[in-house]
Length: 431
Image 1: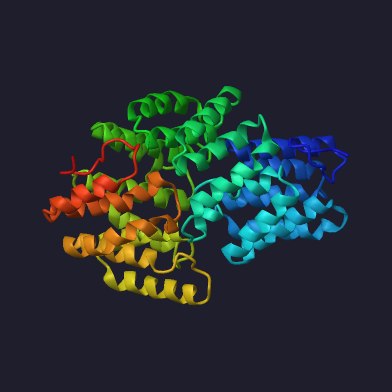
Image 2: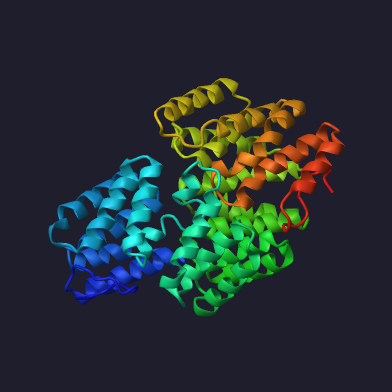
């Protein structure tokens, strides 16, 4: 029987289909373009190959094409009669992922990788700060992910992808030395991998190695195609480094060319998150607001995200609404979140609504309200999801509010309790 790159049996007898499936998996794990197309080549070679349809569904989900992904998964289900137990479980997992609450999907994933720990396609949906656990709304999600990756590590000895994903989880929980060892080993094997480059960028951020990150990304990004999954996001990392270093023109040029609404090449969610967070950090660093860019961001958010669903994305939608000063729209979305929470479908609960009201208070220059809301909430910001580098946006907002309000004692107290590692805070009047 033919197997995938991780030695797992595949229910196809066609070597061309097997090879195209392997290419699709490699593009998924390296975060390159052509994921969907590779799995489509596998389908062309063997239309009855169920996992090729699952892979296509995963690629379509990454592109934000949910209806098409649902159709691809339905096709896989129609072909599941002769598949192996592992393949049947993978298909069932994706059905849970696409239709059930997040905790059900996490439970299904944990059961699947317990039985088939080397199913990288399934594990990949969880092995990053914006994966399943990252969307769980739980406190302790980062530690839970690191523990899962620790437990699975013996099954992936010497594997570059797992090592880089494991490193990301370790980095998010402060285990930087172990993360560095794994990143360097991964990079030695796959220096072309965008995921390895991404893991290195996060490690540099958490270790305050801004100059090293900028030098690395400037060079590495020269060869990364614009259609790559992380093209915009890695430029976002570079732009944050330039902003921190005071290279404001370089930071702004990267934003405009690589991850703005007009110049970015990513999905709607990627553009929303990276562009809005950059614009906000730009202001927090003391630069003038781009009113036109924020108006476009608000319109984009409303068009592409008419209803709340994923906390981390919703936080950025609410940021755009807050900057626009539209309290009615903001409260209407908060009411929708409350309804979802009551139905058990918004696990982060009241964290995003509270942060949203703090953003609006900042817009109105009610810095006392910002501090009163965000200071106690920092301990729960993990529930929003995303990496520590991404959720620093909340802490930076609090620090700027303290500076604006003249609350020097509070500012120093918050800086003292900030995690050790990251470099200077790029916020005006915070030193």
